[in-house]
Image (cartoon, rainbow, N blue to C red; front, side, top):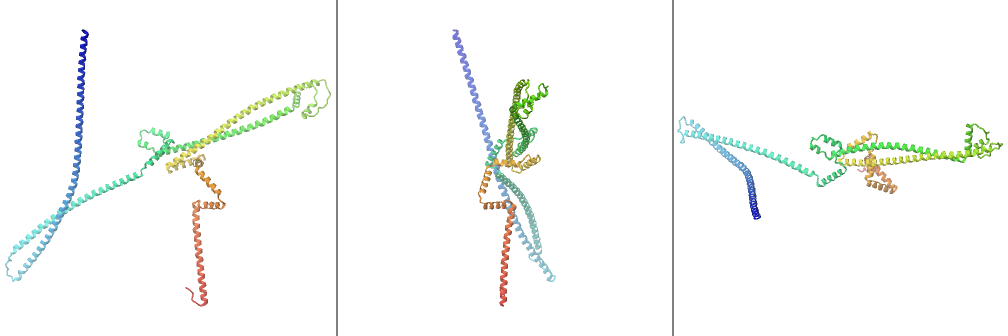
Amino acid sequence: SKIEDLEENREEEIQKELKKAQEELAESEGRRATEALEREASTARKLESVELQLRAERAGREASATQLLKAEDGQGEREAAWEAQRQILVADSERLREELSELSADRDRMRLRLEALTSSSPSSGGVDLPPPSSGGVPGKQQLAAYEAEIGELSTTCNALREEIRAKDAAAAEERRTAQARADALAKERSGLANKVSSLELKAANAPSQEEVDKMRHELRILKKLEYNAVDLDHHGAGASSPGGDPSHREDGDLESVLVAKLRKVEADLVRERREKAEAAKEKEGLSEKLSAAERSAADQERLIASLENDLQLAVSTPASASKKKRSEAADHMPSTNPPDPNTLQSILDPDAPPIATSPSPLTPSIKSKSASEREDDDTSIATIVMAQRDRLRARCDALESERDSFKLELQAQVAAAEGLKADNTKLYEKVRYLQSFGGGSRAAPSTSGIRSRGVAGGGDLDLEALEQRYEANVDPFRQFSRAERQRKYNEMPPMEKVVFVVAKTFLGSKEMRKALFFYVIGMHLLVFVTTYHWSHSSTCDSIHRDSLVAHMHGDAPPV
């Protein structure tokens, strides 16, 4: 029963938790739905407000456009109205001028009539005539009325004239302002046209895609040649001024980089030249040492040859040497035996027969002693010679090893010199590349600086030799063409060779070409003058001859 109760309680709790979770899920879904609806409504409101603003902006634009159109139309209408009013005023002024002229004519006629009436009244004999039917006073009044009307018309005409003058002044002012505005617009238009032409010129002068690709290719080549980096001192200078102008730092264009690299190449070239000179001096010292070692080796060889000759002589004449030693020993030691008369003879002539002497009791012992001493001398001489041979052999081995080391060092120095020559050729190639890239105007001072430093340094820097070596290495086609020209020249017959040499001599330089030109002109002038003089003289001779014949025959000379 407890278990059932516990299970029921557990089921109830599970049901409660399930209902609670369902309620929370429904609340969260409703809340999320309301939030989504609110967001959608706010988005719709925003869209409506944006559309309203867009419509208002469009309406404002249309209103401004219509106002501008109306303003332009109103300005045109006002100008037309002003022009029409001006024409009307001009027509009124003309009409009033005509009326004024008519009234002036009427006034003159009235005055003439009045003068005629006043002049006819005294001629009636003093009798007062009755006034005319129209009456005198009414005529004066009419005249006064006419004059008043004329005055009013004059005043009106003057007012109209003043108004026309004011209108004309206003129109002139408007025309001046319009003209000024037109001039300003024309200037602005010309400025815009100039700007457009300059922009078109810049666009025309702007590099094309092919040129940009070519410049990129050259930049890649420069990067491969490591010309895109600035020297260490330039890096240091840039690091020492970090607060500089970034545009100035970024303006380290290719030209400055190339100039810096050209200076670096010049410094490397001078350093290589100095190292080459030092290597040449060291090579000379080593060559002097090698020559001294060779002389010493030759002396040693001569000494070895002399020793070998001495050894051969000693081996060939052992008896004389032993006798000589014995005589020396006898000179140094007290003699107990009588001197042998054959000693001097054996020394002087080993092949001479011995001199007969009287025998003595000590002769056998002396003969046995001389044989043993001879053997001892032979062994001692052989030992000495072998020791000398060993010493000479060791000395020769040492000299040979030293000679080999000198040869190796000489070969290394020659290889280093060849490497320096190749490096100098490469450096000169880089210099030529920089000169061709920099346009020649900026590279020429650097080349002149190199030449001046080379002259100041004692002629170490031989740019002509470098240029010849560079041309020989770089331009094989020129060598081929030169060889072909030489081959063709050798294949020419002698006459063609003479013509070729003369033409090359006369047409090879500007001075010779100029001299040949003037010579040809002079020869033509000389031929022309000579021909003219010859023809003139022949003509004069024929005329003189004809006149002489005619004179002799008594006829008139021909004209």
